[in-house]
Amino acid sequence: MYVFGGFSKLYAQKNFIQRGIASYYTDRFDGRKTASGEIFDNRELVGSHKKLPFNTMVKVTNLANKRSVVVRINDRGPYAHGRIIDVSKSAANLIGLYATGTAKVLIQAVGRDGVVTKETPKKITPIPAKKITTIVNTNSKTTRASVEKDFKIGKTYDAVGFEKTPHGYGVQVAYFTTLASAKKQCSEVTGATNIQEVFIQVGWDNKKQRKIYRVMVGSFANKSASSLTQRQLRRGGFKGFLARHHLK
Image (tube, rainbow, N blue to C red):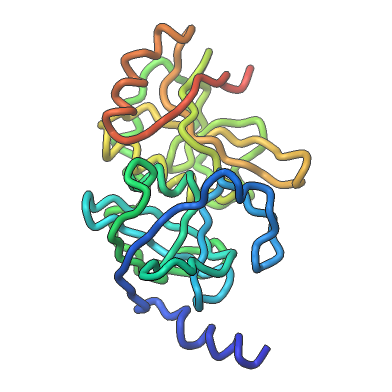
């Protein structure tokens, strides 16, 4: 335990930076126990590093396209020569790594235990509220939810915490177990596609007994109505599927 504490002091500092090759977990690792004792889930934003303490939040930037994602370290590795980090398939999709298999990356420790420090670059902060107010065909409430406990199960919000009531269907591009990751994804979707109608739908995972945050794009009556938005998302590097908004 003392050695692990030493690693914590050495590697979990906000100025820890490393360059090298990243790869991602294939589906055969899904459901396996990680070195931290957690069960690996390729849908979460997680990763492995040889020395960083478990639960360190690491920003991974693909140097080829400058796209970034923040993952939580919950495993040890990778052990392939020259590789410095493995990330989940969901994280790989966000930075264009899934298509190439490996990529040169810059990694930086930015927080601990699901919390990203304030020093995180401004470009990955949530979308300013003035942009979100351009959403059409939705009703909003003026009360803003600012922390995880304010985001209620069965409700839908924009990226800055205002409650919304989209109808029909949306394109689900990801889901997360932390609010910070969902907000970051909203910002990345809008930044890459210029789509403003991006929501956080709050649900509940009965199996794991915890909140989940689905990132939903648009509001459509049916699948065909979403085709243009889905093309925009694909051009921006995002994949998704049609899912129902919360019924009111």
